[in-house]
Image (cartoon, rainbow, N blue to C red):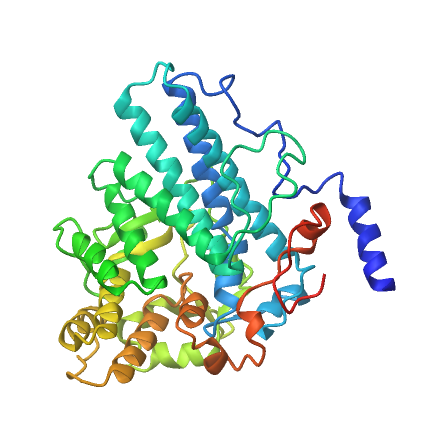
Length: 445
């Protein structure tokens, strides 16, 4: 009880500088007709929404995704970060609080754009531009809620702009099913509004098709996952680049392998690089490939060309080299063609189409300079092949932890004894800000 009281006092002392997702800083909000009143201001508001998306995908969300899996180790000294590797995350963990707030900031900015463009038809914005901007805002909100659901399960669905402190207090958490239904609704709204163009840095109808394929994989709607993957895998604007490292080496961006990546520049750097690169390259190397991953990547039968993901510094320590550019303008890869092949492979295996599953798996393996798998009629064997391929194909992308959780394999693979830890605790700061917010089962507070 004494510990709880001290935490509460600390929270009160800091409350003037900390805000919950239910609060908003009026200096940075994009609210109402006073801000969005023409095409230029609508574009600016949309750009601000992309900034919020890039912000939460920079370090905090990635820390949860990387360190909760079994590819990456933490070399820093902050004990709270080690909680993800130990699978003993506490509600007071600052990283989950920052991630929650960051994602809801993206949601709120999307909500502002959606409300104004949806409800104010008299604005002097051409219908085509209105649809393009509105569709991207729906897409950002969909991806944001998808990431919230992957971490916490059902969350409060805030669908209107938060314009004043405490406005949304008392809104209960939705169920996981309700949250996923909202994600699908937003994806479908975006799909209807956006054009069928190829752009690897903003949301288009094609981006939505890829995200719907991922959505249906997570919700185990196999035929739909295959159908949406097919739309891009049959499009000549998208292909696997050979060899594996062609999509990121030599400072390339927006290659034909990319479906959607977040763009950074010299004025808005990607903090990823500093986390991965060693001190000799100007980084901190606080995220590092663990021994098991290094072994897999350096073994020709499993790593192949993917050993280009790692390198050694002057102290003979391995570091991740997917993010390497100077200045740190590396894109963050949200979805690539390789993922669509492996989505189709997994979904095909689930419906017993083992030939298609093996063909798609081998397409990814071949371009990684690995030998093809022979055909198998054993579903469990094929699914394990795909799981292992995804582990290495996306070694430094935000997939491994979520893959193991969605397939029910996390407890076995990661030796997690308590099933409730597959979802993270709602941040303690949020519970204090709104006592009606229900904590995930198994956690204190």
